[in-house]
Length: 342
Image (tube, rainbow, N blue to C red; front, side, top):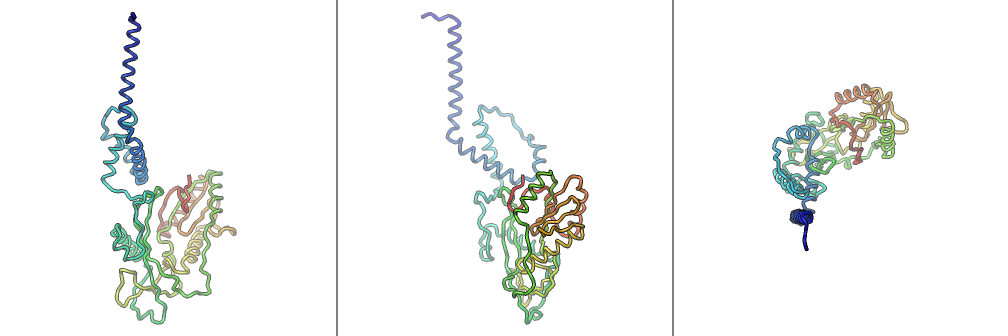
């Protein structure tokens, strides 16, 4: 059989193509075994990393993200995923991340005995000190000799330890809160029940916000109940772990756990909004309105909804609130009662 020049060239080209395909297949095959595990590890690592970074950090990284860039030829996507995973693994190894969804976090301690054996003991102890310091600053209680409480019921108290995580479940901080054992209080004739925003009302408000393209601002009151003055004489034992001989505390402000706490806080907050010119809606005590600005609240979470043209009214009310209470401005509404707002 005689081959002409064209046939020889064609056969040579086909052999070269087959060799290249075979070489590519061998490279791909070398990553087949680890492909699935690497992709999953990379996805989890990216999720945790993105969850931890604030907006400022992300913006700062965007400016110098190419400072250590090294040009490296990547033969195929599998090789690229492998190299990215290896590099990210080294970066993540510098500091351990605790993630609730990945079950990295142990249950928070329920008492001081469990706290002593807890892996995050130091973080919770620091949270205790910060919590007591904030109460000291707000003058929520006063120390007395126990003889002044003679004949009166001295209430017990307890520590509540909780985790604060971001929306992705990554641990942000450990928190400790001192609570009065209000179940030891005698039942009185005065009402103690406070109303809260109904979930159906919140969904209606979100529908209205989407329909009219309203702006939203979310705020949170720090130690909300402690902003209310207590209108009765209440004595409490010293906090567990901070006991002093023959000493008790007289409460000057409302603490979490008292029977009257929710109602006193709702009354206080409603009065503040009324002084700012807002009016209650008869059908929903936790929602008020002024001009085109709607405000609603659930205990210590406050949400403003308004048209762009009404922004000066909303901003003025926000500044007045910040001057009256210790507030955290969370900017645009994203999460409310564990509901993600898109």
